[in-house]
Length: 226
Image (cartoon, rainbow, N blue to C red):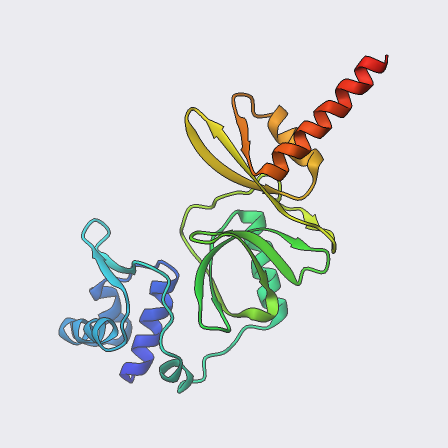
């Protein structure tokens, strides 16, 4: 097979955290180990792939999300998944708590931890590892693959359906001297989360703190009125 086909196979496996070894690669295409090394060198040097070798796992992986140049991949006519396939992959990832590697139409590649969707399942919300909360439309997705990365759950959003008019807010908590962030769109969810996680303190954002204080004051007024 041509080098282009071999490189696309290698890129596909690296994108899925497959960590193919030189022997796996060579056996797959019945080439020598020397030729396999040349192909990997070409991917790294000529195509700018962020490749790293792990002695512990005896294989290669990407150090960050990477998309093979469009002119290179386009010449082979890579198949773009349908909206239905993308939606099913996203929904299954939520159920199984799987991280996805998503390539967007604008060329940006992200590791996405989907937590919930809108009522029509056209927009999905979840964590992006470097971006906080992301909202990704199905129509924006060009490629989607499962990853082996550890899933980060958003407890107040997970498996929820976002109403059309939902406003998602940020809440910053402190526990044992460590700050962490979660997102919510329903004040009742935030209250339940605080009550069920003793030992945490709500530190921000200002809007979230104010809403909790107003809810507490309202409850106190009801108690006092009795």
